[in-house]
Image 1 (cartoon, rainbow, N blue to C red):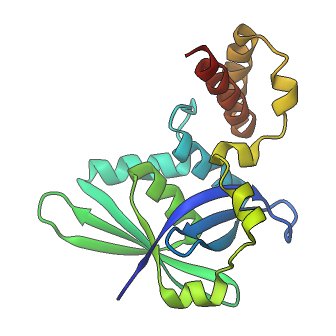
Image 2 (cartoon, rainbow, N blue to C red; image 1 turned 90 degrees about the horizontal axis):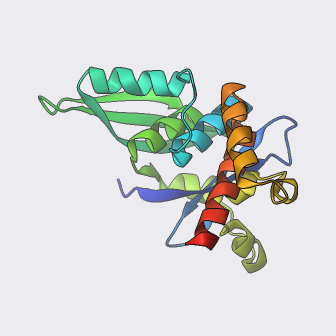
Length: 200
């Protein structure tokens, strides 16, 4: 089957479901977007998997499963979003044993599959049928907004952070991680990165 590769374009608050988030995937060649509604925990886990600079004091479920996969001598080679039924996406996670090349396929929620994929830097694919059924082509103005860095789509306190010193930012970052408030931690991390780029 001719699978279409997707990239993660961003995560934002869902406009349709209270307390949920929208994971925005995109087919780079056509710019067709695939919005997937996910929960708060999964949104947080995907964010942390992408950021890689922030390490929770205790492993999240996806981190624990990642360690198990590696310990079992497997690697995650791809995620395929193969079907959508009544607005629900169905996905497979494809694994391969490093020793004997044996392949294993597990059915998974799309949010969990993506959270795992980012931890292995594995590609995410879908079918043309799924793109035809659930894909949207945003207007040029909207595409420009979505093209901003991933981290900016989840920032909510950017202005207040800009008035804080670097020393205070580091303390706030440590405190946020300690309290397992990863959304805030990601915002602080981005502000620190922004300032370091200015210095460089």
